[in-house]
Length: 539
Ligand code: C2E
Ligand code: CA
Ligand code: CA
Image 1 (cartoon, rainbow, N blue to C red):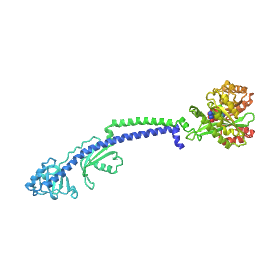
Image 2 (image 1 turned 180 degrees about the vertical axis):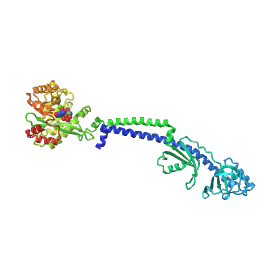
Image 3 (image 1 turned 30 degrees about the horizontal axis):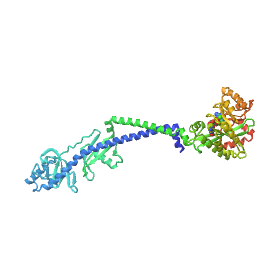
Image 4 (image 1 turned 120 degrees about the horizontal axis):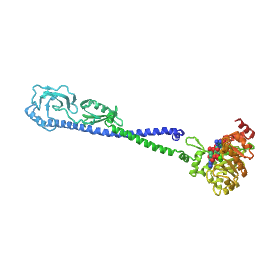
């Protein structure tokens, strides 16, 4: 899960995700466009094949009707003059079939044109013999010399004992350039006879129809098959995709262009949504919960004795990808959305549960918390820190008022009430925020914490020089003084050697912020002040 979430949170994965989303949207849009083109193409193919098939359906109906007429109305003695008259009457019907034979068993004896053949004409081996079912026997494309039409060809169809001659058909086989048609006659066993158009299309269309999934695609072409109700005449159409696109390159270019534009805009929207949804601020607000709020503890040392007085509780927030986020990033959000009191309570609860478990009961410690000026309300704070206050022999609570906004007007009143309940207050980050000598003089806080920028300033810098003055100034107020941000042995020595007394120090040189168990171990080791001092000099 954390890894999955990481994809949304980390910038590196976000880029890949963007590309992925773009590709996906592009593919989907292109697929929609192609499906639409395919469906339109198939529709056109259906229209074209139907038009051609119509002709053959009609022809077949004529043939069946004509045979019905022959059987009913040609009743005279075969090949007699009356017989020929009856034949001619039917030939006169306007159905395009004008030549009939009397040809029992494929032995033609007379026709409309030739009332009696000199010699019986044997039609030979038929191409299709459907004697069993429809009763039709067919000879394709025979020379019609035997009926007095030498040089012409026609198809002879026999239904005992009559036969009719079908002239080569001129069906409308016109289609757009990208489409090819074939007319085939199909035997019951599936054998097909190419009749018109481009040979081979029927076979491929049949294959595509048999094996088709969603669309009758095969070999990069679309197929369509339309047969007459008897399944005898089939018109097959084939349209190669390449041909379709080459026939209309503007359309293809337009479809591609639109897909790119749409994909880009949708991917952008998606990215915006993801960024908003997964922006740090949103993530933090969604997950400002006890199991995401963590604490680390930075030891506070008595400068004179080297004894570890206690610790400052520093909040951390566990991001959805399990990374640990420092307060600079989330404290402004806590303030912006007025979640300060709720946040302070979460930190206090967490700190109590960890410290009470890890620090031995016989090791009293001072625990410094950071609070927002706007939450300087003694009633609420006493409730939040009640678990610590209930064990006064173990814990001493100090509240550091971080200088993010103005200290409220009734601050003094609240500070006094807190003091009566056993809670000390410090002004935090002195020298940077709103606090100045005036606030300090007006507020009877127990202590002042000099901002870390003084102690951390590079040697000989303006800030470094101001460290001495600031210490002198705070010392003059008579408040407990804490200097934080002590990173080097030199700075520690400087503070020790100064005339103005610094009470407590805090900084990476003494210890970085630690987990609760680490803090317990650190305190145990430094129980003997000398041990800790030795450890530090060794480091
Ligand atoms: P702060 O109260 O001034 O806390 C001291 C900060 O200085 C901590 O940063 C600490 O890790 C860092 N620090 C301590 N010693 C050294 C050092 O020798 N060198 C350097 N470079 N840094 C040192 P952190 O933990 O990032 O906290 C930053 C700020 O976030 C805190 O400043 C405090 O204003 C605020 N904060 C942290 N936890 C809480 C909390 O629970 N509630 C409130 N309201 N604010 C908090
Ligand atoms: Ca602080
Ligand atoms: Ca500070």
